[in-house]
Length: 439
Ligand code: UDX
Image (tube, rainbow, N blue to C red):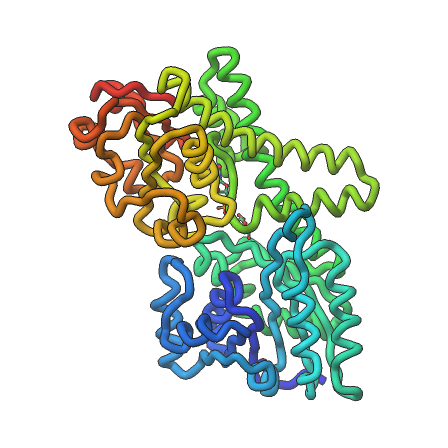
């Protein structure tokens, strides 16, 4: 049943994950068709424009379109007809009013592609989903595919980070193949052969384990960040220095330095919602101790936002009322224009609600923030944002902010007070320039 020619690929859903995956697969030399029901997104991609900011992606997108390996369409039929391996990259956002993931896009993708599966086909879910979804999707495909055609479902979670998506796709730490047969395993090995030959380990599992690898990886990363933020609270209460503490902890190979950066905590379109979805799942399973652990990770993370607001209030002598606050950063982290569940915007809104005049500056994510939070005021430059500020709050650790010179801001502001919520400034140089500095 395995064809000897190179497998052809379709990618269903061209959001962050799907676009990067389609471009990545085309870069490995495959014929790839990307498909989305969003006509605007497809029109942009056809023109060689990525629908979001991601370093290095636009160049590779254009290169592969020009080489004739990468096409885009809004038609399931066209995308699926000639391909052998179909990657489903539909989004799974948090369901409104619930901790659960909204699976409607994933279900729609499996349901709508299945009738077009005429030859032997492997349908590979890449979306982050609650455990049990792959098995359900296999049943959906079985029900909707033409009778007689051979098809299987596999799950192959993706671990890419925004801002490093291209690198993470082409040189991942590991591949995970959740499969139901040696045929599916062999086909995935073939598709990922160039990456595996580059020394990337592949771990073969059942569906459930593959689904859980992804959610537990994100839960563990969140746990690490919330752990160091919990230590930050102890340091604050006792006079310890959490940055030195984190440095010393990280030298232990068993702990490591990564994701031990204390500060405003995590946000974005993945970590918070994936931890909450796992929390909902463990609650359903009656695993209350596990649910409590995950709930604490989320609670400690959210408490960093209110602590940052409180820090600014203390610096402003107890009230934001009528004060000008310059907010630096809108993205949930640097090198992305993503403002989903952004800790920076959450703080900006809370400060505004306490009566401050807030001006936000983010050179890359400003446009998205303007669209999603029109109630805030925005400035196109750092200098404009800092004008007459009573307080400067650094909420996303962009290089632009890390490297700013306090002497340049000093004559612009009304009061030299700064909250460094990402521990990204040098306290010594800001204090030497006459600023009251808190982190
Ligand atoms: C994350 C996972 O890393 C990735 O594997 C998965 O596929 C998707 O979710 P991403 O959302 O791009 O990726 O962000 P990540 O780089 O993990 O950062 C998450 C958040 O944690 C950011 O808000 C960041 O500012 C924060 N963070 C990170 C900290 O607060 N401290 C740290 O030490 C590291």
